[in-house]
Length: 197
Image (tube, rainbow, N blue to C red; front, side):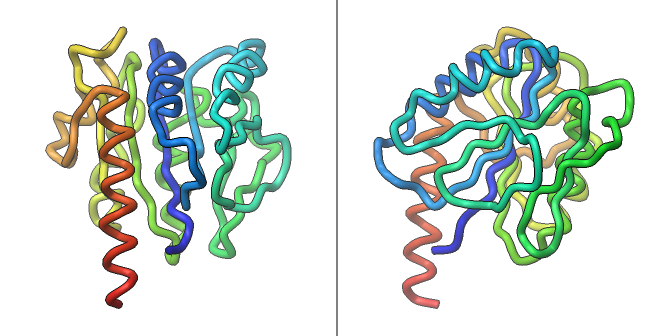
């Protein structure tokens, strides 16, 4: 099957939740490219990259230039410059900052991903504060992008997933480990559909 772009969003508590999610994925190659936007300081990015780089089949790296969408990659959005996606299937690093008040701005990341018309996408919102990402729910849903969230009781800070859930567009909620299992089921179901397409 073609590579699926999985957009990960988080803020407070997000790094630990995303690590738990990634660590729970099977130790095998998956047809997935992850892009993570997490509200943190620029200085913490190398530590985030390091903590997410322990899975043997997933390579985490901070976006420092234009990047191809490839399976086995986990790209981390920078704080000081925004990223965008182009129809040819690449991630572009802009010289422009993210729109205030968030950096990275999850709404911008989600909305820009919709320029990839021929790439299957999935959005997962993890622990975090504020409502970043929720304003993109209708656009994601209109483009047939499934939205999943971490369950509120497993979050350090539940505001971000809660606000996304309030849009009525979230179709699946679980713990980080449960989200990893669901992703495997999602990939398997789409692999089966591809065989009969």
